Image (cartoon, rainbow, N blue to C red; front, top):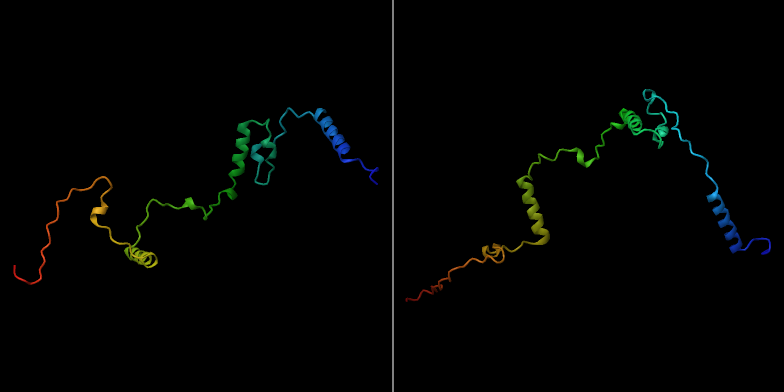
Length: 144
């Protein structure tokens, strides 16, 4: 049974030699002339445009064929799912009642933030020199 089959290394070596021989063999000569092209006026949406994409075809002819193809009305369909189709230059502001609802939801979900004193509103490094506060008088109703 094992004698009937080639072992792995002999089979691998034979296949490698076959592949090297095929690589050295000259390939079929490529056609130097561009393929025969149909006239541009006769092209329709159903025409085969593959011949125009050949490497030997002039760039201007390729572009003319593609222009003819994409001039078909089937390519002029607006995709309403496109995000960039709307005009976002004239946006209206958020209505005040919606802002109030958003603020209420924010305070409900995350709690109210403590209001910052005005001194904390100053950026760091720009402390404002303040005069010392006058001592507070206690008014306990006693004279003098």
